Amino acid sequence: MESTPVTEPEASAVSPAAAKKTVTITDGAVEYAKKRLAQRGTPDAALRLGVRGGGCSGFSYVIEFSDEPPRERDLVFEAGGVRFYVDKKSFVYLAGSALDYEKTLVFQGFKFKNPQEASRCGCGHSFTVR
Image (cartoon, rainbow, N blue to C red; front, side, top):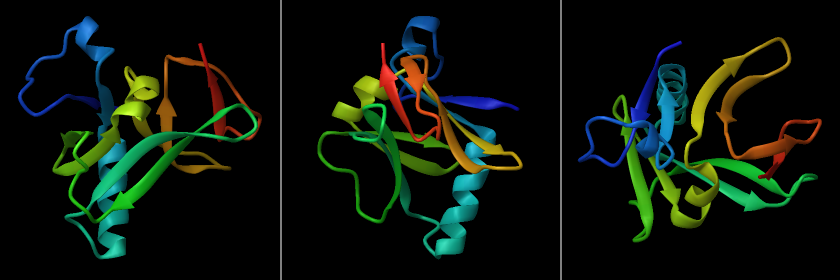
């Protein structure tokens, strides 16, 4: 599985320190995003990545389609021609994370690998932070 570090458009190389200030989007996640956007009929739309309070462990990941331009305070990432928006509040919890695509017998879809997670609930949809 290859991954593409995604930073703000002007950055070209990602140092270990900078990796904590970005979100990595794997090639599998990019391909899955392209597939879902095409199925939806909006290949030029973006995906919004976020974190919201809730769930049995305190926080839940959110991934939504976004047909709108980015909001004023959004960070905009691009990988493989797909745009990803992250609001600054969510970025506090997502910095250093990798968005991947996973397909198992019981799950298929996006999955965050977040070094800031202290624990996950049994269903895997919510988490606590360190």
